[in-house]
Image (cartoon, rainbow, N blue to C red; front, side):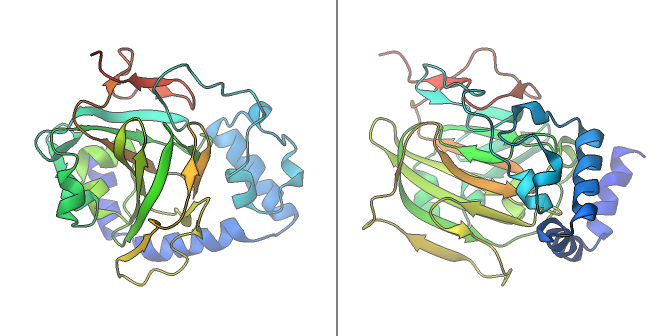
Length: 284
């Protein structure tokens, strides 16, 4: 099937219904059916269960329990870098923000204002800054971690579409990451200033969750929701878990100008692992 046909099908499919159905299946505790589903998934996508804290497939009560499984202690050591990669996955795009535009794929850009749900003041902080889009495939570990220390200040739920976020779709659907459902997490780093982590939803992504809130989008109302944490002391250290996807997706990060110099070995489509060096502060 050609990429063009794959993209056309995504416009035609009832993505909301498929996602709701997938969420119900993933959360169900169905005994032997759940075990067979997980075993099929492990074989289909080549999931390395040797890295899981619990490698016994039969012990998982639901597909979501399996999909958000923790890793064994020590399998993702943290690099001695100012910023570490926060996920297992692959690099979609990364680099400089062109004024306020982010590269999605060749021929496609979207704005930081669109990404954060229309908040121009928030987006303005990252004008001429840096970004990184990281894609989590079905086989990957699906917990999200902190790239550096950060104090949570705001969280914004932005309703949207539910296109797939795989590389084919990123090349074919304009404004993909700024049109899909997403959760915008705003942090303040004592060393690096403000930064944003955006959890982008997708087709069959049942939910997105954070460690301080739990599931953020249990009911899709179509309305923007916002939470502020200025009076709360929610400080997460570099490498700590900050959230998870209940089925896979993409994370987009924004940093201010002159905050990060990316790892020289990074390149689009390159696989990445949690804890590897993402970058360092610019030399002074």
